[in-house]
Image 1 (cartoon, one colour):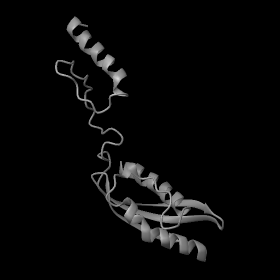
Image 2: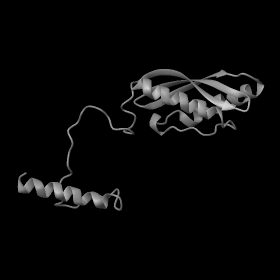
Image 3: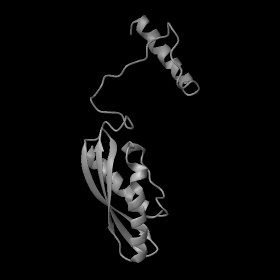
Image 4: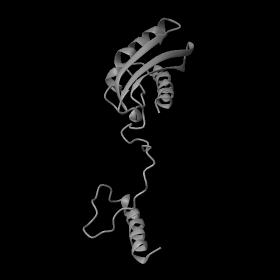
Length: 147
């Protein structure tokens, strides 16, 4: 390794130890340029969802309620890794499930539309907390299919 290159690499490594405490700081004038890694064409996880193909995807997710195992259908439309539409297909096995899946279906769009798919982790929607488990399971299947 040439001495001038070695200094740049060491300076870059030394700067890494400060990254955790000085996040968001710009390099000072005269500092060594950051090391670059050749691009493989793949996007890094969380890079604005760029690794997902645009389109509409569907999956079913299951969850356990006091009445047993339940299923909820999820259809997401993606554009540049952002959710542009969501549809829920209810598969209720009893009146309570019908009620909670209906509440979930009525409130989910407000929580996911316009958001990056990698930032989604639904917990409770319109009073329905168990249906979100099925939604999140379906979401993982959709993410895998859309890559």
